[in-house]
Length: 317
Image 1 (cartoon, helix red, strand yellow):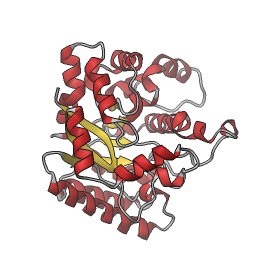
Image 2 (spheres, helix red, strand yellow; image 1 turned 135 degrees about the vertical axis):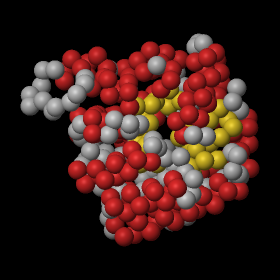
Image 3 (cartoon, helix red, strand yellow; image 1 turned 60 degrees about the vertical axis):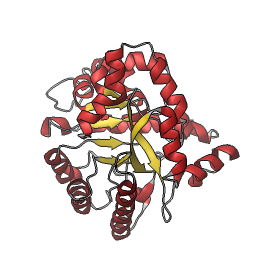
């Protein structure tokens, strides 16, 4: 079956990436694999797509990208360079690749301008933001002009995991636990909840957020979100319950979560119209992800929505 994959990463010279920054977290064979494949945008990557039946990969610069840069001016120029590089690579394979903008969130006005350029001039399909920028989250008031432009452009924002700004002691002595084993999910799911509790979606009711890894656990705890929201004081003012915002404004992808039970829960919680296929290449295996979604115990109409129809509609592919 035709597939569109949304959380597919690349790397280019001059940028940090998770593998190099966390060499002590990963097995040597895994580091060699991602080093071989992250910067490769031709034969290996397209062969992996073909084997998995992936028609289009939406590419994004791997985390943390420019978002750990302390100098805002350097972040702005580096983000522009990353986006120009990606646009040139997409032009070599225009039917196989699309792009998410990489943005210098340290400087909100520049991020607005770069998003506009990427969407209107480079033809990108949205933006992927690696969580917080030096500890500043996207619910901060300085980002309201950014969200206003996102809403005006009608594109989604993919919030991607990154290391916590401050690591809680619960992760001490277990570095992997603070990363992709668990910490990234807690960080990214919490980030999405900050956006909800800030009233962002009441202010901009057309916004769409994408979360990987089956929605970073949010589909599994919607009842509890509402239950606990009702009892805490002081209560933020929202027009609806937290679960309603998750269902109306968040898309979940299957990136890095090849588990039938998790897929069933995500579909039940959000609806098949809010779930999209992804791999998390090259951190996950394209063929394994494809075999998972092709064998998942769901209906064929649901499979078609998840594999490509939802992404094609949301990203206007």
